Image 1 (cartoon, one colour):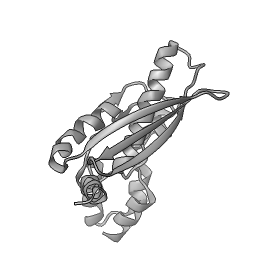
Image 2 (image 1 turned 180 degrees about the vertical axis):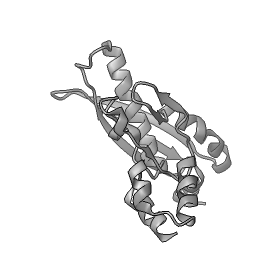
Image 3 (image 1 turned 135 degrees about the horizontal axis):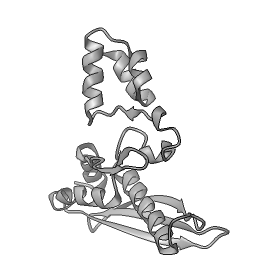
Image 4 (image 1 turned 60 degrees about the vertical axis):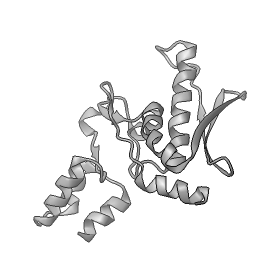
Length: 179
């Protein structure tokens, strides 16, 4: 089996739950470590390895380029992410600032490689509590909100009412409308 077939097989079966909770922003997220731990069973099954490399680019502000690569010894497929380092982040020492950027870079490079999550990540929409009353839970096929939404639609409910309570992608909205 060619590497792209192995990767496609992993991408369609792979799941990495958002098991960590940010109590400040009131949202669940997954870390690079969670993703790496979840991918381990697939490595032996498919005879592949995963390597994550980082490179620091010196510009006006430091930028970390992270590359996640899957290889079967014959071929390699890579995905990259680019993350800026906020050197002015209050409440963090410089090593923590670089560590946070490194973690984000790994998480997004791995997410790109394994096509993780069909919903927008909470990190992208997080306002860190500025409007906690307006924060909506995302509907995804791997959470209870999806099951509730499907049940509601099958009982005659409308997607518009669900959108008032939950956030969803356009694809999810179209899926729910088709039920």
